[in-house]
Amino acid sequence: MFIPEVRQLATIVDRWWPEVAAFIDTGHSNAESEGINRVIKLVARNAFGFRNNDHQQLRTRCVTTRRARGHLRIAQL
Image 1 (tube, helix red, strand yellow):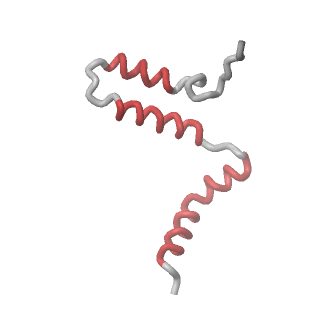
Image 2 (cartoon, one colour):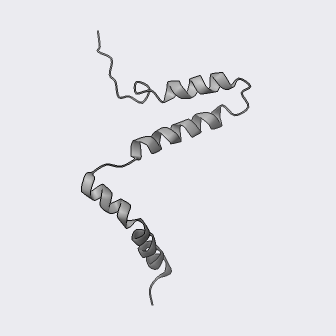
Image 3 (tube, rainbow, N blue to C red):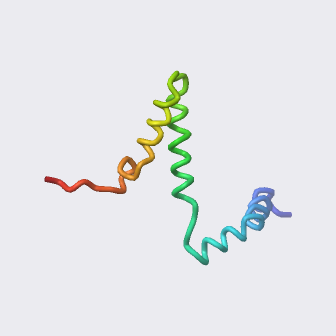
C-alpha cells in the first residue's frame, strides 16, 4: 500500500527524531565539526603516499584554521 521509500523515510525520521527535536529546540548542530572532519579526510586522501607524517599533520592543521576557512578577513590596506 505504501511506497517502500516513504516507509523507509518514516523509519529514519522516527529513529533520528530526538536529535531533530534537539536541533529545533536549541538551534545548535555539529555541522561545523563535521565540516572540519570532511576537510581533514580530504587532505589525508590528497596526501596519500607522502612519507613524512609530520608534514601531513602540519598540512591538516593549516587547512583547518579559521583563517583558511575564511572566518577571519584581513583588513585591506
